[in-house]
Image 1: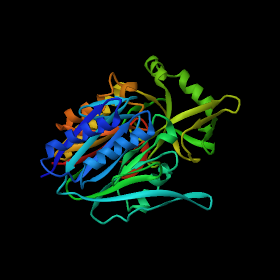
Image 2: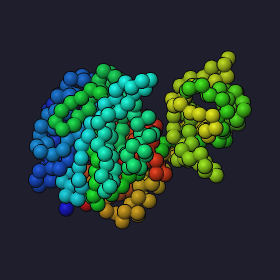
Image 3: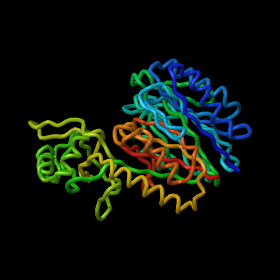
Length: 386
C-alpha cells in the first residue's frame, strides 16, 4: 500500500530546516521511501544547494528530485520570499520510477535537448523541473508529443532569489545549476493530473493577422495597440477594476474549437506596448492565423476553477488519491489570494488528503486536452493513488 508524508520547515539555517522537514516527512512511512522530493527557497544559492543535498542524504536509497524556488508548498501551507524547505516522501509499491537528466547543447541555429530516456509503453506521466534561463523548456514541452509519444508532463520551472545565478536542480543526491531533471512514472499508483488556470478572458477572440517574432502588429486586421484600446474602452466597471491586477494575453490551445472560453488559452505576459508602432510585445512567439484573447487575473475565477477541476478529478478517480505534488505559479499565492496557503488548502480539502507538497514556479507544466504546455498563473497537480 502506498504511504505518504510531507513537511515544511522555515528558518535562517536552511540546512537545519532541510533536516527537520525531511525527518518529519519520512516519519509516517514506517520504512524506507521510494521517492523523496525537496524544494528549497533561500537568498544564498550555495546554502540552497547544501540544504537540498542534506535532504537527499537523509532520504537513504530513495530516488530524489527537486529544485530551488522563490517559495515552497507543504505541510498545508505556502511560504514565499524567505528561507524555507518543503519535503514530500512516498512509498510507492505500484509505481516504477525512472530518473533522467536533460541538457541543451548548441546545434546549428538552435539548442538540441539530449539525455531523454525513451518512455516505456506503460509509462503514465513524466515529472520535470527545468532551469528556464538555459533550458528551452517551452520548445521541449511543445514538441514533447512527438518526442515522448504523447506522454503527459507535469512539473515547473525552477527559480531563485537572484534569478539565473541562483537556480539549483536536485537529482540522485547531486546538485546541478542548469538543464532539467525528471522522472518517468509508470503503474497504477499514478492517479492523474489536474491543471487549473487563474485568469479569465475579456473582449473577443481575435485572429493574429500580422506578427514579427514576439511582437503582435495586427489583430483581426487592426493595429494591435489600437485593438487593445478599443477593447479596454468597452470593458465593464468590474473588468476595469481587474486591470489593476495586470493585463495578459491568452493564446488558444486548440485552433479548431468552435468557441473559446475560460481555460482554453495559454496565459502569456503582455511585456510592452508601442503606440507609435501600434504593436504589443508578448511573452511567446505566435504565428499569423492563431487565435488570441486578452485576459485578466481574477481571484474568484481562479478559486472557482480550481475547486471545480479538483472535484471533477475526485469523481473521476473515485476518491482514491492519497498524495500529490503541486506546482503553483509564483503569481498566485499571496499575490492573488488572501494567503499563500490557498492552493494547497484547496487541494487537501477537495481531495481529502494531507501529503501535498510542491513550489511556486516561474512557469507551470501540465497537459490540457492531450497536449503538454508551459502555463502561467496556473496550478498543476500530479496525484498518486493510495
